[in-house]
Length: 284
Image 1 (cartoon, rainbow, N blue to C red):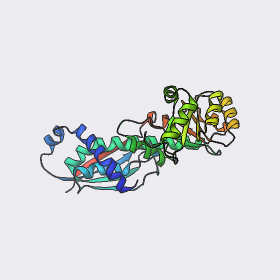
Image 2: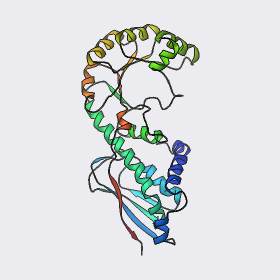
Image 3: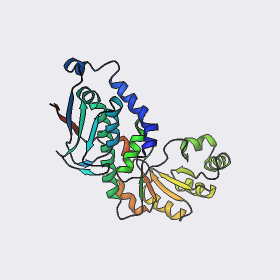
Image 4: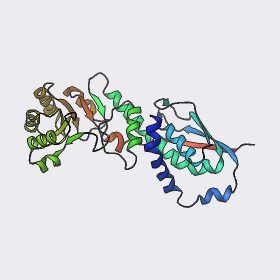
């Protein structure tokens, strides 16, 4: 993750998460540790997976106290295993206790997405189809979740509504049809913008192709209809499959020949990777 972009975009979100967890004070910590005392704690994996979000984990503690030292024996994208010790946090014990949950929430969530993505990418090996994420992300977590998808070997679809033109069913309904929607997009947007159109039937696919769509999204179509759509398009537009795509059914899509498959499950259904900050002890 680019350090400048990270600090500009992520720091405020991390501070919001910390404010959510410490609205006034950490009563438990202040009760048992009224004064600064140096200590250390170990970051331990509790299951196998792909680690992701180490920089975010570290930044939580650095925001609380820049003098906190966070060391890792792995890097983002590495495979980790159950009971593996992958890092250490050293600093003011109060800071370690106050930042623990927020830091782990980020690391567990991002590692879970990276793990789920990596497992899904493996299912697509041997074909040309590339895996994409969607905008079905947790509010205020998109920058972290999309980074996790890339760390797991997937690819990012548009980041937000300003990032690309995607004419879905409701846009088409508002415009009065596929042709009208594509023409309106061509008139409004810069020529450098590609236009993607969502279709649900072969008839709609034919209309989108005739209207000059650059990318055609085949939404919730059967495998057989997707094969026919890809043959119809014949390379005149890029193709994307979407709609309830999960690890359980994604292999069926390989035979269709689509260029991309997008899956909201990468970000909305990936379970966390269980991690723990343990063995906190004072330094003599």
